[in-house]
Length: 91
Image 1 (cartoon, rainbow, N blue to C red):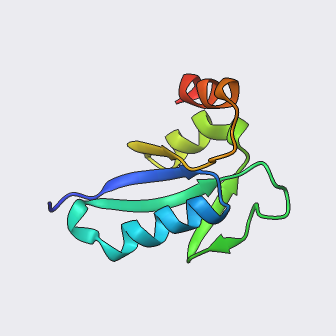
Image 2 (cartoon, rainbow, N blue to C red):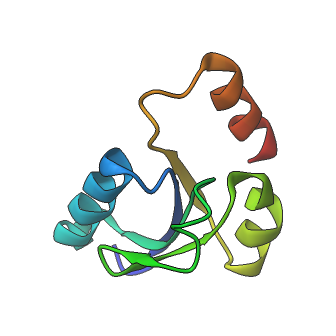
């Protein structure tokens, strides 16, 4: 796959980090992680596994547009059903 699919990972915890590392180890799948979203203010602006935490989940729409995101992965195993539905609605 020549064209990389710009991906945003929602959740910069252990699960999100694992997803980002896995995507980086398997470039043949065609995904490139452009950033994380996370509601923990101490993570915003930091880099995790070399990938920036761009902002809170509530900013998904504007950050996805700003970074030309084509694919979103929700990586928060403890998220409630309503939280996941809200994230999907935003996407």
